[in-house]
Length: 500
Image (cartoon, rainbow, N blue to C red; front, side, top):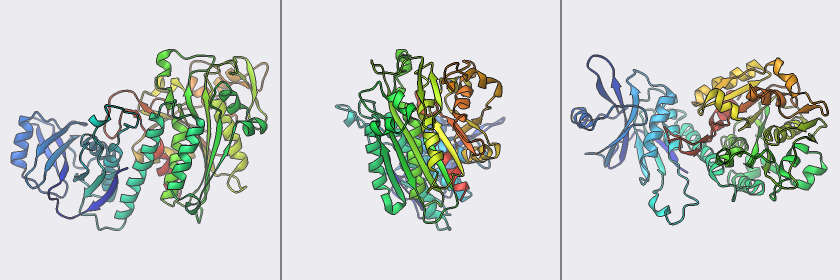
């Protein structure tokens, strides 16, 4: 994982990243944005012009340096007197992605305040990622990502500088953990392997000394205790289900929140088998569980004074003679019955179990102040909002608005979606308390309405549908690589920070 530091010392014999933008108008011109570092701009601009530089986002151009070993220009887009934090994040990330094979890189972009410095550090660290664990003979062709990131800024000695460096390193570490888990093939990441991986991370994060405790229910305990959702989804697989619970208790607490993440380590669709193309990215169907576990460890690492109860219901949704059939009725933890009309609408079943349990347990026997579930839940999310914008649904607008403000600060795109009352009757079942599917049109909203049935009316609740944004099947961009993205980790962390 990359490390981050801030410095105001001279940059000598280093790889130096600076910004490049373009002024629009009658005589458009390139602008070098090198922060506090003065460069010989005339000759550099001439060379950049000859190379056809545009300054557009995701453009990275490398030139041999004079006082530095390599000078790297990363596109900031249209020239502005002040660049947005997300603009700086993405530009830094694009440069970092392009510099594999370089151990240490220094970034000097326009950063008038500590928030801008933080954005540069975050983007650079997030972009320093690769996943080559399962490469064989071709592994030698892949160079290592950047390991040491320095942000050159005159603010390096200001109060809070060391905290920025630690936060950026922590965000990168746990965002990369989510990416690693999502990118790991289902042949190597089943529910038991997921639990083992998180347990190792908890130990590395400090375990009990950091206020972290972990417990796990196996398939026998799940069945005996009435977790019908997780049990029914996992019963068709040779790999048994699990319910993972991580509790973080700070030395002093300003509140307690539950985080619940969908953990389907592979989703074949069950007896409603998906087509081949629909299954190819289904190793990512545990992105929500990975996110809530990772952000809990990040919260503990940063010692935030908010107690967290994270729950990850884990299962493989597979086809076999023991798989749940269309028309079967299962009993969710707590007693509510569900007619499973479509075994491919399985995520809401495991989440329902975990939501009820999370509310029941609370934190140290006391009620939670709010709960958030995170799930790669519906294909309808991508149809409605595309591949980079996640959905958020709620029973509490103030709670939602606070989260949306945090997501905007974090640089992740979320959009508020309704829970229309007129769609709720479509979940009615003639033989059970409700069905697991309803109206096809507005399917993302119907899924949210299903989950709402298991949330106490007065408990603030958010449902985050990250289905498409959790897995990038297109080209890399900014600080985002192909494959797992780690979406929601930064927004959730920023949200928890806002409560401190």
